[in-house]
Image (tube, rainbow, N blue to C red; front, side, top):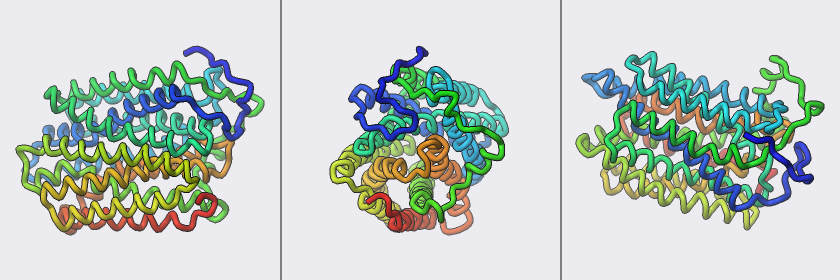
Length: 423
């Protein structure tokens, strides 16, 4: 990395006014493409298959429960990793900037953990290295997300946030296509994801300058200050609190509806032999509508200067998609639901990310505060397999799973209503 030369207009902690260029956005999107592919391909395919091959259970729910427990432990690690690394990046005085060192460290940890995950032959080993992988993901994504608040003006954040979201769908589909199409085993699948992660994040890391924090402006760092930073008073900062609650609920709904999709195809629809191909096709439909919604509605929210109506609609579309699957569990109908889910979640991911950057309590702690906000995206995804397995096995089967998914999404839409600072 070379030390960046910053333009004179860069004032520490000031709200950015200068629009980022198309080149900046391209590098940003490329980095997220690599990140999402490395995180979601294991969740959707590699990790559950690795666990199932290791356990070879007589009852498939045993694999789901093991997957859920491992994901839950990793989610607990993310609960700490996001705000801690965000707070540290707020205080980093490196000549390379505040965020770039953490993007670099997070990429290395994430990639190394994925590679080592592929050679694990015990459930304990899988749990350890998936947790380390998720910690690396949190380091990397917390720092990269903070660059939106650091460098992107408010009237461009919906569109730029769409380029966080759109690569999510593309990365998932391409990751699944590579693993399935090349018939990769766990070792080669994880290794490929780790290499692609490094290759795709590196250009942003090397090219995009980062604001340097002068040492005289570095906030004091103590364990007490770190612990206190985990708590943001929802009474003092109600917009932040409502946005966080909305994000938690919508992401729980989405995670319940997607993380067990492979199992739903296999055992809910009875398509064990074609499950991988069905998953890839459904993800392709989801990809198309997700990208259209993320980029189109993200840009439209910038143009009209409103965020909340888009968040409402996105949450309710996800709820509708889950209800369709719950009451009409048939493959063709599932494709319709996948399209609606892509529209809803693509819109939500782009517009809600932009909205979140506008309700932060303090410009001096953007990294830490966005780290807390990002917990609401990653932790539900990590905990959903365990919660979903419990719902399917002990409660009401896949119908109950998707009804709870719909309910969470609808409540998430209601939760954004009290936000006052953003329209």
